[in-house]
Structure formats: structure tokens, C-alpha cells
Image (cartoon, rainbow, N blue to C red):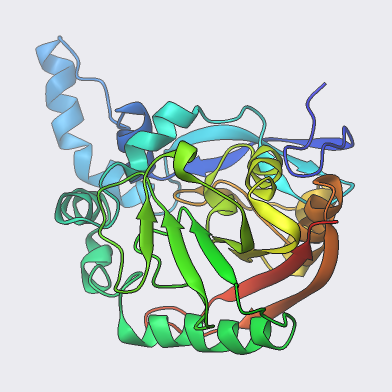
Length: 301
């Protein structure tokens, strides 16, 4: 029996093949594309050409795509693929994340991405919208000592750490250079213990979030804090339909392979053996999108 990879519960509802894999994900992760087979019969090839335009018009109404089985945890409301994606395969999706080659290939499959490619993760409006509220929210909940240390786990260049005084590090295996004032760590053996560890916009991308949170928690000092931030891609009403088995739409599988709610984050913290300090769902404005993000602060016992 499958278990929830967010809280460990076996209270799983099978949802069937409702996970729609985006073409860019399909190409990068599996090196596959959706296509029509070409007949060897000349008469059939002629008919394929003749009917090509009507087929394209019909595809606007009824799409053909790659689908994966999904399931929901009725204990914590977490939604996951029935079979976890392979870590190495997912690594191919992020090998040159947000680089020129990444953007060029994604635009090939998603032409509308061209309009926002230069803003995602680096636009001034997004940076302000993420850092300023985070700094205020964390600062109101943590009394930072003189020797305060912060680690952004998987945080690219570390720019999204809260602007609090202390030593700042980023663990990032890619060649991205850290922003000024942040020390880059490239190997797990370089990791130490920190007052504050951040997992921001990481868990929606990984196949086994509970495993990762348990692993990262070992980097916390005694009474140290773990901060988690994830997007809430589905409304609470739609999540309730998914978990209840009455949802009639598809679940997009793109960069985000997991769906979160406040409840699923709280259960994740509990299952990881941490103490929940506070959570909230907040509406932000990045300029190119207005997401709902879930913030969670936990403490090591």
C-alpha cells in the first residue's frame, strides 16, 4: 500500500490518471514528446495531411496529453503522484535552471513563457514581495541571538533569505554564484549547524518531502528554527474536492509535482518530529503572478 510522502499516513485515496504532464516536463525529465505516428501507407499519409487542420482544431477542445496517476492523503490533504518521480530524472529538469538554455527550451514548448522569463525569480517586484514580508514575519517570531546563523537550503544564490543580522549561507549544488554577503556551500559535507534553516519553494518540486525535511532538520542547532515556504496552487475548495474524489479537472504536472495546504504543512512538521511555531497563507504580488504562499515556522525540540 502506498503511503503519503508528506506525513507517512497510509490513508490514501487513488485518483486515477488525472495528472497532466506538461510538454516541457515530459521532454526534460523523460526525453519524450506527444505526437502522432506517421503511416507507411501513402494513402493514409495523404489522409493524415488532409485531416491535420481539423485535428488541430479539435485538439483545442479535447487535448491529447501524457497523464500520470495521482493520489491524495485523506489524513493531511497532500496530493502526490502515485509513483514518485526519480531524483535523477527530475535533476534533468533543473540542471540549468532559469539559464538562457533553460528559458530557450521552455519557450519552445511554452511560447507565452517568453513574456515572463526575465522576471521569474529575479524581478525586483518579486524580490521585494518575497523578502520584505518574510523578514517582518520571521523577525516577529524569532529573537535572533548575537551568533545567529542562517542557511538557505537549495536557495540558488541565497537572495531570498530574510534580511536579519547574522552569518548567512546557501547550500546549492549548481554553479550559481551567491549574492554579496552570503557564503556558498556546494557539498553536503560542508554543512554545519545553524540557528535558522530555510526551505523556500523547494518541497513542491521534490518527490519525497518528508524525507527531505527530516534530513534538513539535522542541520538545526538545538532550539533552532526551520522555515518552510510553498505555493498553494489549488484553492481549499478544490483540494477538498480532490481529497473527496469529486474533482473533475486535471492536476498540472510541471515544475510543481505536489499540492499543499496549511493542514498538509502542519502534518509534515508533526511527522518530522518538529514543534510547530506558526503558519499562515498569504497573498503576494510578484508582478508577473499573484500567488498564495504558505509560510510555516517550526522549531527543533
